[in-house]
Image 1 (cartoon, rainbow, N blue to C red):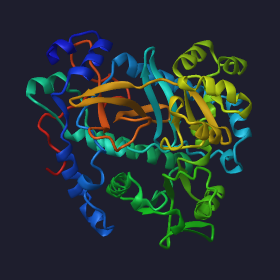
Image 2 (spheres, helix red, strand yellow; image 1 turned 30 degrees about the horizontal axis):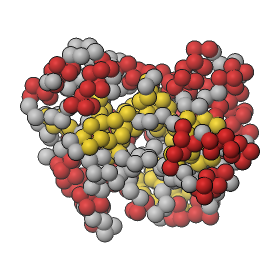
Image 3 (cartoon, rainbow, N blue to C red; image 1 turned 45 degrees about the horizontal axis):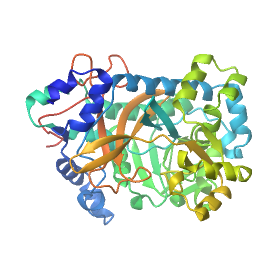
Length: 457
């Protein structure tokens, strides 16, 4: 079947068929790597880092992912309904009652770039987890500049009105909003992008991209390990310079280690704006929260409106806390479950139940885990096999700024699969093209650049 015939099919079936049959559009990965290497070459050399082609061969996939417009809208609806529940007094009282002290303080900043991760199940999008320091947004904005098509006809079929420079501005606008929310009209002069040993982090290139974005707006920016920060005289310092805002990429979510002591002190004294912050993690990203958001009885007891209850129970796989007293039942049902550490990140320590050994299961019972009903991911056919699809919605203040896919093989998302990695998301419209939703935050879905140009090329 031709691309034109597929695109003229009904919305959902068109997306499914394109994921099986379309190989004539996608990402020029080689051009993208070359451009990033040239753009960040000074930074890479100063840190003694190899080029992207060597260090990140599977960061970007050459394939796009097609998602129906209905599923795009449904994900946005689920996100809005989750935000409604998280903003309710009963939810916050329940969640914060068991949170660390540092997470109970509610800053005026809300938290940038939350990641709402979905699998497309048989009944539509299923929200499998929420992250508060979701990586990849800047990389995916760059990815959008390296799309290609085999011919102009195909490019026209999947083109949409998208200005990726505007997406860069939108990303910066999130940080500006956080700053003004916390500090009013005070000038924002210096930002620190903070992670443990940042140059060794897999997404370090994105840290450099964010630093360049901040500097382009006249704001000094540094990439720092938390041990390089000083708390002195009521001020957070890096290299002797005062830090106004910290873009927090740490996985020490509650600043519990010695390395984050200075940052914790500054945060507790409101001497620095931290985004995302411990309070946001407690409300959004602790996976125990999914046991509440997927429980109809709890939601109704809290007085949540019935349409929201129905949406969340349908869209969030039933999740329960793992308890030793339930060991026999959990083991018997393990093939239908996915086990995740409540405060885990990056799929570390997560296990598909059918792969469990008795020893690993015993470790899970002794840890802080949740068990989630298994929702197999949808698939994208590659020329030499099948890749699983995870959809990440990058969200700020409840609005979706960007949707990206991650393609992989194995139990969980990774950047080790040949042909896998970040992929752009397109969706067919009723008119037979891939496009955008007018007047929505999804204005960058569906862009294709047939001329293969990247900034500076």
